Length: 82
Image (tube, rainbow, N blue to C red):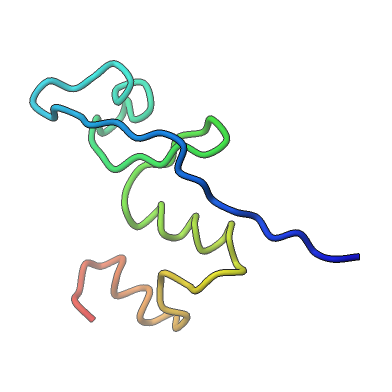
């Protein structure tokens, strides 16, 4: 049986006025009230690094977005330039 590859399709995007935050943004990211927010399967995922980690974990049939080396990934968490 052939393994079916999952595909990510951007189906909607919003242009936001960040000086006047929309109810949609506040619903998806009520804690930090800022972008970026990835909404996947109706579940919001906030913060850039967390979105990248989530993408690497979910779609492991594509090129990795973060370094494989744990030390290099830790440096990203600490905000250090690689």
